[in-house]
Length: 142
Image (cartoon, rainbow, N blue to C red; front, side):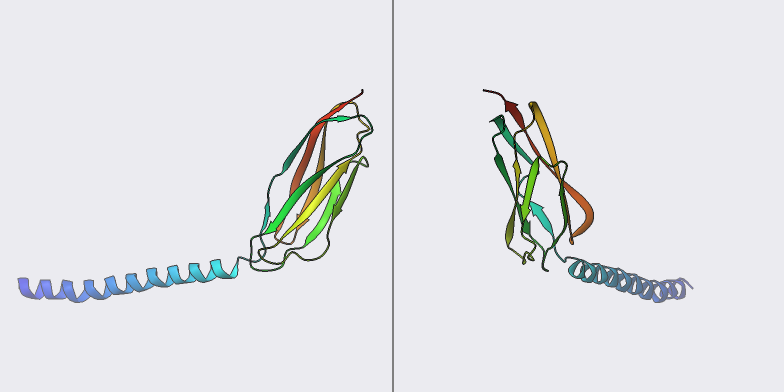
């Protein structure tokens, strides 16, 4: 009787273990496939805050940010705007190919007085969230 019970347990346990192992293996395989398909363009910034230091009143100063595409599809800047008219924004509308970089430059005109912080809002096709870049400094009168 013991032999029959052990035989039945083995007969039912082995297929169950094999089925569980196959299901786990297929889940891992699906995850790997999803990760490969989901890469696309990826925006990476060298810095998001540019410290200008002290600048003289009504003197223009430029800040440069480097945007790198670390994905596997072309990256586009779909929207870019500064927080005020005192900052001039320049960037290329051409696609940034995988592994390549592009400059986004902001020139502040120095018309303020004292400490300042200006923002640049950037949206790319890599993400629906916006990226906020900042330029900071202090305008001094000499």
